[in-house]
Figure 1 (cartoon, rainbow, N blue to C red):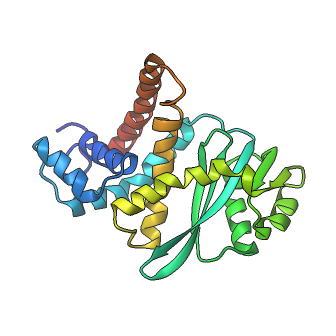
Figure 2 (figure 1 turned 180 degrees about the horizontal axis):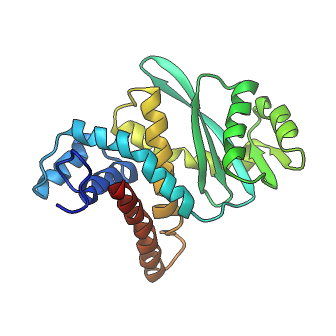
Length: 234
């Protein structure tokens, strides 16, 4: 078969399809396995899990290079997640149009955690014009020190954009009957956000006409296919 990675039974197109289905929709590995089996492709859910773990980073890199320029207004928010009896805090940043910038799972909701999260963001994106947060005081000093020219707006009612961005995570968590490991959460949600950016936010399913949606979907698909070709060539 063409474009088959070394020591793999299936071509990269099939592997890429499985990874896309898992990260784009509210499906478990077993759901993806059943859909592939309907097409005559017999793989175990553990095989699909290994594909996602091995190749997700490469898909993230390609999508990040091809994604559009983010807006200069950021919304930051946190949500609590329970994993194996322990509570974690998922930090999320989106721009003014709901484009996910980053997610970062940490144990605390304090100043040090805020600094770590802001450092990750500023390594990847230019300093924003405005940052909107909730009333969490942990943001105040880090934003003032790391983004001195940025306007910081701290108001619960202004941050609905970031709070709405948590909804796909909750739906995925419910589908999987909770996540199983902190590392798995970080890896899964990072690629989930990138996939949603190009296949949902950029497509504009609620704001664009059907013809524009189809055109934008094909553009998103071309980005994903490019990632498949890059990985297959390695």
